[in-house]
Image (cartoon, rainbow, N blue to C red; front, side):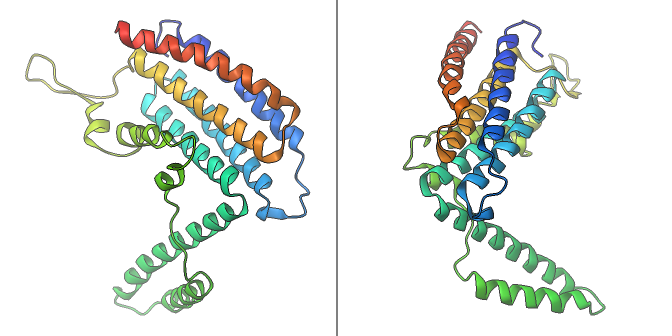
Length: 256
């Protein structure tokens, strides 16, 4: 943690968000949906559960001082929110896009594996099975394509969300000049120190801010898709508290 005590208010808000998220799940009670996995409500609850796990993991990482790992999990929360937005906007059409995305990915991995099999000195039975799988999948999903997260946000109220996703991808989730520079410190001497430095206060607060923003958004989207659950009434209060803390973060950043 940052040691200043300013993160305590964010952890308190995070706890409230987790409680509301759990209540939304319990109140939805859709385990016996007649539509199964094609029901947008079921997918929304699955995204809520995934987000709750990602969010809890991010909070634990912040407490351990592992800011890169925390920001990587917050990135997952933001990606979940992008999917919730697509689900709320397009409904079953988005579920179809999700299925096509899955099979497009499987076909890409299958082709790579098939190339590896072909390069082996001995003939492997796996190659025949892969070719059969790829042929059948291409026939079943001839127009399968990957989901374009950025494009899916362009026309909606969350169009700026991809910027947060991009920042967390570059400075935490992926190896990059930015993410690797975290581990390299060159003081006034020529000695280079390599390790895991303590995270700065501003970045800790920012990470908590982004995580709470994404988790509130996932809860709002889930409530919208499922249909005004009782605990959904608490979301406005959570957002107001988030806004107050966000303003405090801006003040901390300007003071720094």
